[in-house]
Amino acid sequence: MELVTPEIGLVFWTTVSFLVLFFLLGKFAWKPIMGAIDDRERSIEDALLKAEAAKEEMSRLTNENEVLLKQARAERDLILSEAKKIKDQIVADAKEAAHKEGARQIELARVEINNQKAIAMADVKNQVAQLSIQVAEKILQNQLQDQQKQDELVSQLLKEVKL
Amino acid sequence: MYLSHILNSKKIALSLILGVFLTFISCKTFAIQHEEHAVAAEETNTEKEFSPSEVILEHIADSHSWHLWGHTTVPLPVILYTDQGIEMFSSAHFEHGHADYPGKYYTYRLVKDKIAIVGPGEELTAGANMLNMHKKLIDLSITKNVVSMWISLVLLLIIFLSVSAAYKKRAGKAPKGLQSFMEPIILFVRDDIARPNIGYKYQRFMPLLLTVFFFIWINNLIGLVPFFPGGSNLTGNIAVTFVLSVITLIIVNVNGNKYYWKHIFAPDVPVWLYPIMWPVELVGIISKPFALMIRLFANITAGHIIVLSLISLIFVFKSVAIAPVSVAFVVFMDVLELLVAALQAFIFTLLTALFIGTAIEEHHH
Image (cartoon, rainbow over all chains, first blue to last red; front, side, top):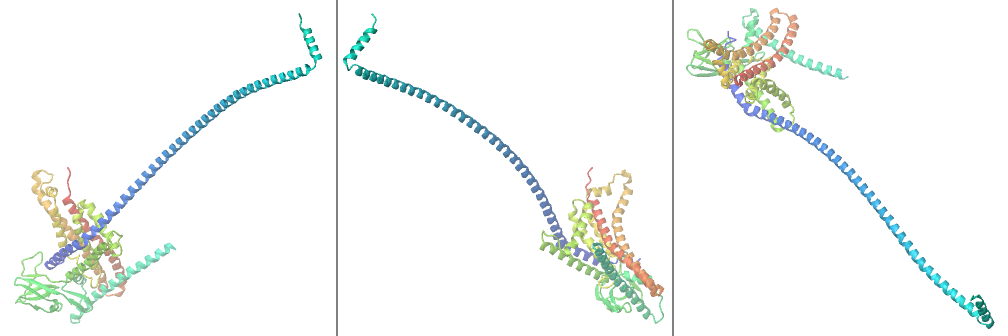
């Protein structure tokens, strides 16, 4: 019975001691300890969340980059193909223009050549005529130098004339 | 190679533990032996029959002096609150119960380590206890258990103030040293005791639960150490468990919300049953902390009694041959008590948290 009878002295001192311990530990130990643990847990959670967000941001950026890259590639291809088309067009146009010009030049040249040829021919004809006149004149002068020959010619001419 | 290393370290750890416990046991043996010799020497050479129950009860009871070793005993201060006034003197004056001390108001005698007033006609008046308050003598002495409790208080304050300082110094960093040893235990109390049982309002009760847990645990452990500064049976003393359970009772009922009180005074039963329900529910309020009180007291006291009984076997059989058997069993019991020390602290805290949880639980109908 003595064993299970609480003694007042010990009850009193236990109450006092426990309350003192409770207030001292509560104020100087549990409050800072729990606060620090909570803070650290929160900061760890924050860090994890941030890391997750960063990862998402990264993947988002990577995706965006890829999309951008794809777009850029497509645009480049488009630009390249357009440029090629334009180049081909220009080359074709130039070729055609050159062709036309060449043809025109050739035509002009031919016309000029023809003109020059005609002029030259006319010139040659004149000179030939003059030469033949001069030749004829010289021949005539030679032939008509002596009287006999003049008479002969007159006679011949007269012979030729048919009446 | 790796495995053998583990085996090796385990062996070392095991032998270390065994060594510590063997030291404990030899101390316990010496303590009992000393008692026996002292008793035998006092009793005018006639060899007195060894009475294990007497020795055991003496060892688990509170005392006004602290026996350290051999013939060295520290007398502790006696504080008496009598109907005439307060008296303070050293327990050395009793000379281990062989002398009466004439105080200012009465003459006092130590009977079975309890102080009683000796009347003029040699009649004894025992001091007041919790079952009988109306006495002219209330013993408020600083007994062995009180000193032991203060040692535990100092230990707790040193440990947790230094841990708290470590948290301040190493804010935001990983715990280190003593701090890293204590943090998992603190987190255990928070995550496995407070949170699941109390719910989201657990933070308000953390200081109480942590204090109760570590107070009980460290005192259980101190109780396992057979020599100074251990050797007391603080958590196996009903007065201590009484105070702890009363604190639980007060905290639970002060924090009880309207659902808790409605459940007690207006439960979902026909109204004519209320007169039966009220006493039942009121008994329930008391019986829950009462069970806490008895559980802690009985577990720790039982452990002490078993260990002391096993040691007493040696003296009952008056044979050294029985010693190895006793020692083997005591080692086993001490290891078991080591587990019980933590387990009882855990159970007391867990049930306190559970009672608080049921008292503040919100009902959503």
